[in-house]
Length: 432
Image 1 (cartoon, one colour):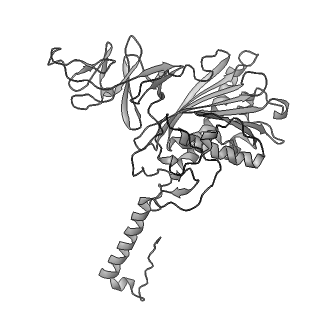
Image 2 (cartoon, one colour; image 1 turned 90 degrees about the vertical axis):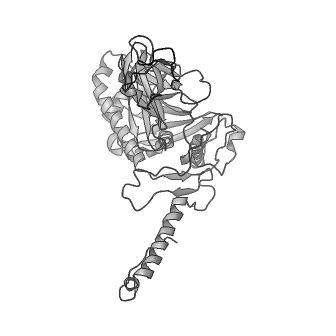
Image 3 (cartoon, rainbow, N blue to C red; image 1 turned 90 degrees about the horizontal axis):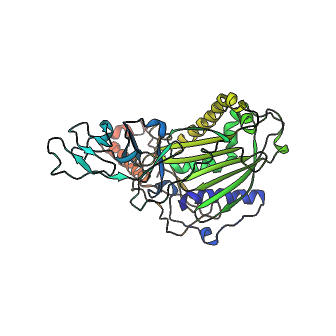
């Protein structure tokens, strides 16, 4: 998690330099640079609660297949009692339990009918009886909150689950829940939300918006950034006007403060237009799907404060939904097009993609080494300035491709010398 905050701190420092504002409450120990960590190789730490499904996706008496970092997980909602989670395989023939059936408070494998309860214990084998029952499967701590299912995929003792998701359980707000699987490393999504200067990407949806960075606050496990927004001589987009609450007026006439907070593994965004309560409250969670963690499922809980006139927000809800879906779609598309960039805490960058495949920029190659993840007990290491250090990092795939080109050229000149003669020039590309 510290490595994720490194990128946020780099960005905040660059903004501080450009806007000449003062950093607030930054612990001294987290400003020490660390030159060894590669942000894009840092796996999501499993010892946290991660959202894996919406409550609406798990029907009563049914199973639902999901995953965390390539680990298959099955969610089961019995006819009575809370939902529970198990590893998605039968201990007998490894058949996915998500293909089975829910029977009472157990799930029964579709192959031989082995049954498992919420603790993962095998409680019945039809042809063996209950005298000699085999081993069971791994259970996952599971919790349901505000329309979302969380699991604890780690081996450590589960801590208290999130007590609330933004303003989802506040009746003075209207809430929508949406999201999708995004083809990028989860750290890209963290950075995207913290960096409000990418509003140029949304110019066709929101029009011309001028964000202004105000400052940041940071602790050992969190960081907050403040922004204000101006719209020079332009009317707001309809969806944005719904959120702000008026089709007319300028931001200069309101409080106009946006605060974005990263508290691993979640993020929140709050927008104030007037008053003490935020007008907009957004909660976001990112769960890695595949083993290489190049896919993440993004969960968004967006809450808008209800205006004084009843029914106005309900009538405008379709426009707001279209607006937020379009902005989210633009963010997802640009993240999916990013190459796999190795970001060290020195600021050095290495492009780890092959130019041989036209889709390589959309689907980065998995890392050659298994993911490591931060230890919550480790001291924080943050970068104090963006772009510090220099030099190019050469990945192992780059070296292998260069060696392959040289070997191909040598074999061509040995077996087909006429093709490489001056009368048949054949240029050979090399990155040597």
